[in-house]
Image (cartoon, rainbow, N blue to C red; front, side, top):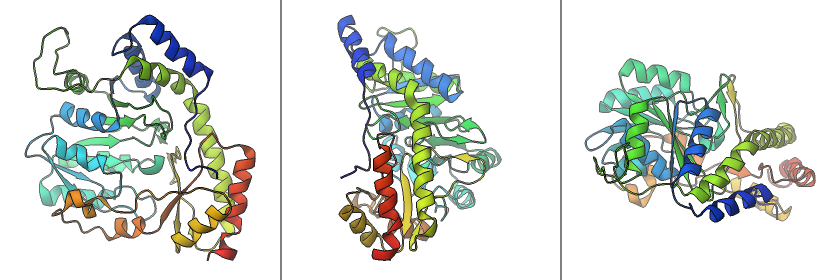
Amino acid sequence: MIPVANPVFGDAEKEAVLAVLDSGMVADGPEVRRFEEEFAAYCGANHAVATSNGTTALVAALVGLGIGEGDVVVTTPFSFVASANAIRLVGAEPVFADVDPRTYNLDPEKARAAVREHDADAILAVHLYGLPADVAALREIADEEDVLLLEDAAQAHGARYDGQHVGTFGDAAAFSFYPTKNMTTGEGGMVVTNREDVAERAASYVNHGRGPEGGYSHRDLGSNHRMTSIGAAIGRVQLERLPEWIEARRENAAALTDALSSVHGVMAPVEPDGSEHAYHQYTVRCTDRDAVAAHLEDAGVGSGVYYPTIIPELEAYDGYDADVPVARAASEQVLSLPVHPGLSPEDVDRVVNALRSVDVEAR
């Protein structure tokens, strides 16, 4: 079975980990600082703060932006639950606005309406599946409505909007390095920002509220959400390989899109003008998802549903009302296919051939 995701590790990652182990400095330290500097440079941002995972990166970014008790954050209902959980974990309240039916990303005008209706303090936009949200429109809305803009770029390492890496359009952004992401540290996250004050507060929060002088200078309430040097060492190697992996994802995606050009009942993902999709997931829309998934399984091709339930319909969000019919419809029809750089040419051919026969056997 061809898996829908598959992390890639090589000798360079193993050697980097062994070097850290030999150094004896396995916790937060110089290796993490170097990774932060290199990731910030890759994104084209001024600052980066490494964290223990993507969720803590979101929380740290919100803390860095000063979002907390009593604040309201407009966000998408169609994402992994961490996007909304982070808002609640800092004491703020999420308000859900509907998504664009073509991109599944936050609909800017629905977001604007929600900001005005709920007197919101911030917008948290997700670059779902690796496709940049409409950050130009969202940035304009944030400026006009005087609210903060946070990018959840957990799935979008390497994605670009008008030639600029995502993570640099908002007041801050959060990335995840979970094993299935475009690059990994085993488990980890990163806050990216051009604002020094946001970076300082985020760095303090993930390090027990310490001040920049270190030691026992605990100025604020914080927690331990630091990245290990072992994770950073893996991340530095993976970051070097990220451009080639994104290119491979895009080449694989192009082959799948070409195969779907004559398939009935399965709609390929879109890439709007100005956007460069990173294809963390290659997500199609099916008129009969179960039949397509079964057909692919019979052909030895794995698939996955991200996400089968919108956030406001999860048990943990009982009581959260949301008029989001577009997101709800998408959750019932999306299906993600293998697109990762671990696919061999033979794997790609197998997925392509399975797709080309979908309209015959699974219309």
